[in-house]
Image (cartoon, rainbow, N blue to C red; front, side, top):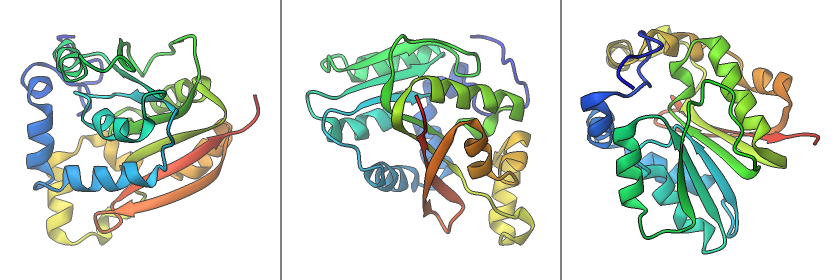
Length: 219
């Protein structure tokens, strides 16, 4: 992918950014990224044998952490659209038969012909226009088993004007315009209207980051 569909988004990765994504995330988070990601994935209470769909999986950094919990009978499918990222993902898991990659867009409806115990998305959904986020949520719903869990690791809901000045400066400097809209919305209500229930939250980084769990209801 050479051109971005959403010019104002920061989650469509191309060229240098895609090739160096993990290093960039480390720098932007002042080295804190891996630490709270590990805590968040631990909080997901992944079980041996779980099947997981990782939307916008990147290079597989999160999948590598989740792989510690699923055992030999579990599976992880990473889904992304950057060729550079796909190559890094496949190289990372070349000896793991239960971890695979699908090159698809999460902002368009797709069908993998299977359903999963868990759908996970980390710091991706905030970077889309809101109508596109609804498509991402529908993809998650369609690919979950009844009773399966959708986990969104992303910014929490907060008032940016109440942030300490230095945090507000960094947020405005680093984040795309869609993030400012994302933090103002009621995500439990949005997910409830889409067909989810039984919400649970875990917070990180002074409660600016949240792991939100939502369970698929019905069939």
